[in-house]
Length: 349
Image (tube, rainbow, N blue to C red):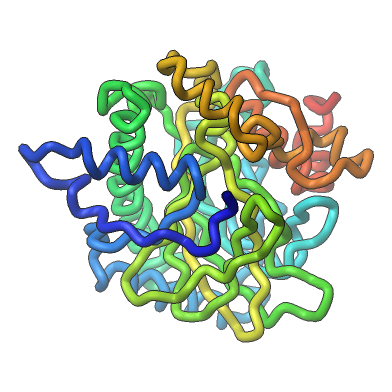
């Protein structure tokens, strides 16, 4: 049956030392199977850090464009930094938001193959005289949300009948996660702050801010407003977990349409680039549940760059990348075609 509301769940048990987390793991995994979205309370994120992060965003996005362009994403072969409204596209339509992307930093690699190794590298930062706390607050934010994501991923492992560290062990020693700091102007008629899509990674943690606008699509095709509830975080799943669980856990379509200026801060938990997206060895009951649910066994993926260029419908692809690096390379090629050509034309098909 199609869900009609976003569940709210207390995440406190995920952090309780010495207690049995089985009930929480079962409840959270059931939510992720049927809905793919949740609002979590008692999440362990310091309210002062959240306030500092939103203050940082407001200060940055109020800066003159000439200052923002000091960290212009166009200058980063690793797709990091600031971009203006409309720079990113989803489903062949521009996303009407500006944002800063901060990825996990690793040294540049000299390996030319596979091509996704080119995504390793540094972030771009404004100096403290231009934006006090830019680097320090951003990195604290990433660390805090990664801790929450790890706890929730451990719960999913248990809920899938695996050891609690199973999914985390797959991350390898160079995880590539993304923090996205976003400013949405009011959405014009016919547009979207971000168009309907799935997230690419394992697990997303979003501080949605006080302004509504995030919408989730249920299996019936209805768009549901995600309610604004103070001191809650939005959790949703990405296509990596959909692929690895054989569609038992699905990435749920979502978009943003806002009537007012909106700020939000997302964190996208991701593993090392070479991580194989091999299907997990789950009990037969999980595959049986997928087989019995058209919503699950028919769930598609975001199109490949070639499919998107040919006009493929959103989330209609049957393609399964073999690695997380390939998944990200497809995402950048699809969403930043001009920038991909500018920096990596020799690595494109």
